[in-house]
Image (tube, rainbow, N blue to C red; front, side, top):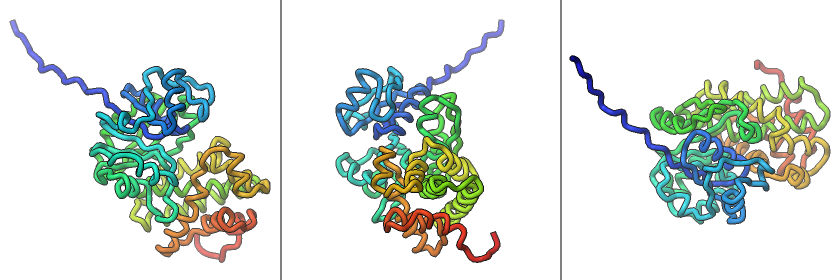
Length: 342
């Protein structure tokens, strides 16, 4: 009689993940992680938001009457959120992140994944740079997620893809293994700079495209702006060390098309309002939530100027949102170009 013995396969521990930021995208991504089987704690700045999530499984201020998974925990205590977390997911708006980090303890030495798409105004810091400089995150453990991620569609569990970029492939694969929700397909990359720049600058281009639509221009105009906008993003990303192929993928073209085309995009809606004749303050009030492209535009333009990168659409958006220029200057930036090879 032959007997065979097998070593037991060790169980993979359930990851304990803290999502820091309970706005629409942070709460939606917390749902993704809960649907993936992780133990998720969502940190909200305001206790009333955390209490509502705990008691009613809803975040009405951002997500209306959508019911969140019962397993999703919520707290307004940053110490509670950080305790025993295997990884942190950051979903705080770019322009308030430094101030928020100043109220937190130093981030623990665990993987930190940024969901924030923007560049800090005044310092021109990318979010991963800000997390390491102001938050104490370990640079070797800090990555970014980006792609065509309209939060309302993901909240409704509609299929989409995203890219996780980390300093090394093994870490990216490890973080990606925690995201197994059937409606979100995750790809990995080591191009942190490229993925981060693509995610930040596409918001600026989306304002331009929305403005063109608000002015009554057609698909030819918007397709031209999207295409030339991708060229701007690629030039800047490569100048900062990003890889060209990143900008042709989900984090580049994919995210740009979604953000520039969908009425679910805050930056697109803000551009639409500008095109209809509203000023920046009124347009922002109409959108009602943070449109990162407004503050990011000047930071992008400053980086481009420092590196000698030509970004005419971005410059036109800066003139409109910062200096009160006429909104039709956005399309003029595309059309009033000298003859040159594409």
